[in-house]
Image 1: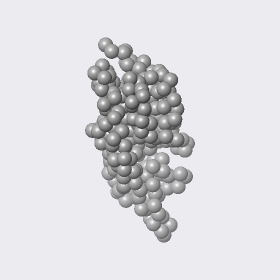
Image 2: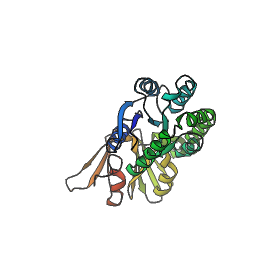
Image 3: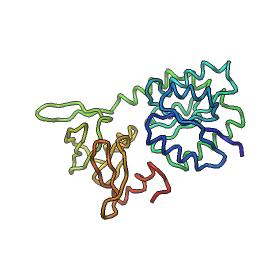
Image 4: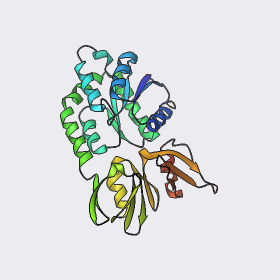
Length: 267
């Protein structure tokens, strides 16, 4: 079995911790570094020469696409050091295009162990066949298209116009911490404010799954990026604690999906 070295590039500590745990469970796969932004990623690529990068697209300083651009500019000088790219993203709308045009694979968040194993196995085969150079060159040619699609994915349909106190206000969906069902409405909890919006909770989650909303209860969903802890209450029921301090109960039906955020084997 061809050994594979992996570099994780993601600015979310919870995501990095989860990916590291999953990678460390795999045979013949070594996690050799973790980067929190694009600049650090490029420095570690130069220093560590990983076979594969698990690359988040949305990062500070330099994003995932900037990393690709810098790598493609070094193709001629460092062809033997070009890693394979596996996108880890909360925005599958534009990651699909990346997959089709040069990235080895894309995996939507939250990452499942079986899906990551599948991607690493593909990387093992591709690396053995020395495909990294050709794939990265192809990906580099499509960066402008990918950036346009990323911009569209972030801008289109990811805000709501909500009535509040006699006026209609715009609420960006990525500002929403969690939501609670109230009949045919959902109560939006966003930055210490609440808004009542007419939409069924299932429809809201489906529309905003790409930016990280996860159903945790038949009457509640949370923005996964706001989760800071998962615990049990005195009755043994699970609760997610958010960065706002809010605690949201987890229904039994949704427990497996919630626990998959940190480990697929935790029951």
